[in-house]
Amino acid sequence: MSEMKHDPDPQADSLQRALGEARVLKETVSALRDELELMEASTGEKVRRAVAASAVEIAQLKETIAIQRLEMEDMQFRKQQAVQEARATSNTEIVQLKETAAELRKRLEDMRDEKAAAVQNAVAKAQGEIGQLKSGILALREEMDNLELEKGEKVQKVRADSHSEIGQLQETVAALRSELEELQFEYEDRLQEQERALRDEIRQLQETVTVLRNNINTDN
Image 1 (tube, rainbow, N blue to C red):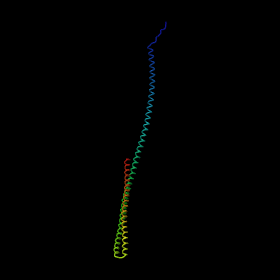
Image 2: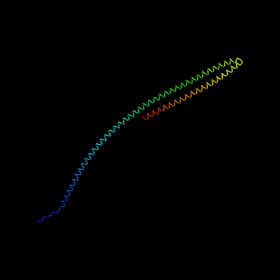
Image 3: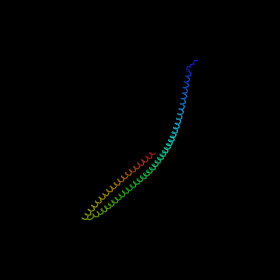
Image 4: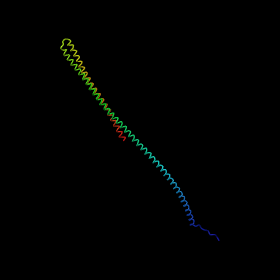
């Protein structure tokens, strides 16, 4: 009895191929799942590291901000202290300038009084000398009148001498009067010059006070 030959079953072959493909797909899915788990684990570690690094950086930034805040507060304190010191110095300088201006005004007034007294003394002295000269002239005139009663050469000689002395006295009076006028002009010129110098000095002091006040206002 001869053996029967079995023809290949197409359905069995198709099933085998399907099973093979299913096995390959399962292996692929398993491999992908393992790779995904590794990736998730790696990503989680990276996230934890990033969070830790961020926390460190945030802490450093907070520390930097705190340091900068302290530096800023210290800077503001030093600035306020410098402003107060500058203001105190400026106030002291202003007081000194005011005292200097007051002293200069007093010196100017004293100088005016001294010059006025000197002029008055010079005028009084000149007037005294003029009075003495006038008295001398009157005495000479009286003497001349008495001498006119005499005769001869002696009378003429005395008259000539008297005229000469009177002329000299008149010249002396004119010279003293001219000297007095020049003295008055000189005192007035010196007084005006000193007054101008003092006014210039006072104006410079006032300008210095104004500049200091402007600097204080600018710092504030």
